[in-house]
Length: 336
Image (cartoon, rainbow, N blue to C red; front, side, top):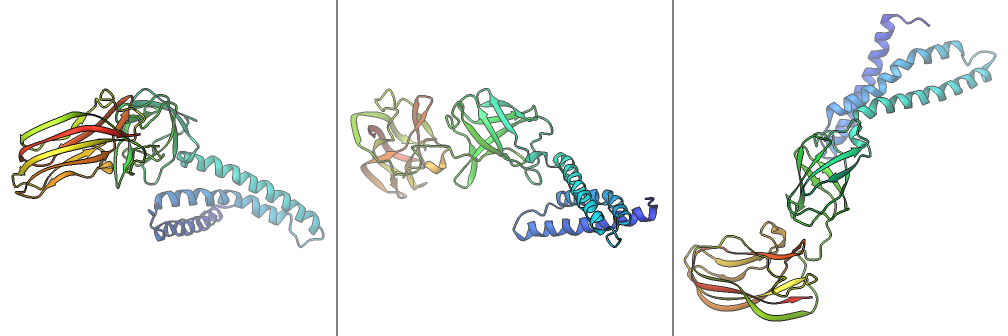
């Protein structure tokens, strides 16, 4: 069947109008649920889908004219239409897959194997058509097998597309991954947000922000710090807990603080202990807070989490303002 230019224009215009109608509908649906409208993606997908029907329109019109149902052979012609419709639908489905797969390649079930330590390098399978995406209109969930454990903050470079930080959510903010969060041979789920990878997997811990339970064990007191009068002390790391007799199986340590000091007026002064200075979600209660210009002599004990990273047991501490006098921090036991 011969189709003139005007007919082709009419067919293309009709299917384009229908495509734009569904694209607008999809984008407005996204906006009504609080998501980005994704106008470009919606229009491209809709045009591809409906323009394929525009290409098939002449064949469908020819079948309708060649085998009408209002003849003396309605059953035969109906059977022809049934089989023709099946094959046309199959061809349309195959064409949809071939075209949209190129546009939606980030939704493929990619799997990445990352080697190295800390600055990991990975490849994905399948490799064809892979990109990080932009974290807005294109995004994906990527399972990654890490062959080695990490010892510090982590970056990942996939298929030579560039080294990107891998961050985790701590409280309400993204933060670098801690040493030991990734175990050798573990698989984690990541997503690229346009700037860095976000770790979506749950990192198992036994020492996070919950009161430790167990049996207290007391040891001969170990003086960790003796701080005389002076300025506030920035975060310090104490990493000889194992040598002091704290086993790796312990869930927390017991500290004692003796304080005899006067706040200089910049207060309130206090000592803070964390499993890591970067782990704001794991803040222990402050020790011995002093009100402004207060004078106190006191002794207090507390149970605090600590880090167990690649065989190194540690925790961090600081004092928050200037003071006169001194304080001591002693390790006196642990919770098993």
